Image 1: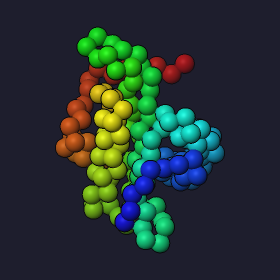
Image 2: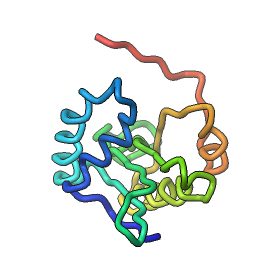
Image 3: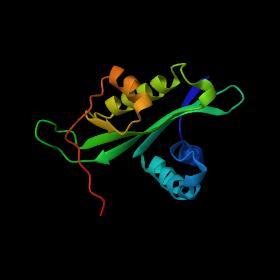
Image 4: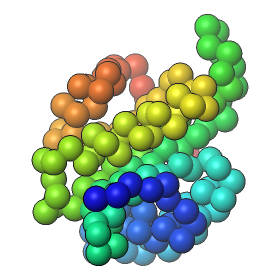
Length: 143
């Protein structure tokens, strides 16, 4: 197993991690195009685990958001953890933890102090063990 940073050539693979269901297939080209550009601009950081044969078995990404300094936090960026994925045959071997840890280290290296994520029930324990806390204050509006 070897880990490496994702590049624009990995955008389609990352899109498939985000949209693995056939019902979402139409979303992949648009997302892959965005990921490729975001990787080039340095606002998306991705990490992928490859087998010796070259297949991707796990990955995660970090989207850097220009947030602006706020009260008590002079750092202008925040980050969102996205696209955490492990191939079903490789689950429960610590790969998701390694991928998320790589993202957290990339955030630290850039001085990012605040991260958020959306999660499934299955993954909540992993994120809690890594220090993430649930929030009851988030609200959203779709325009």
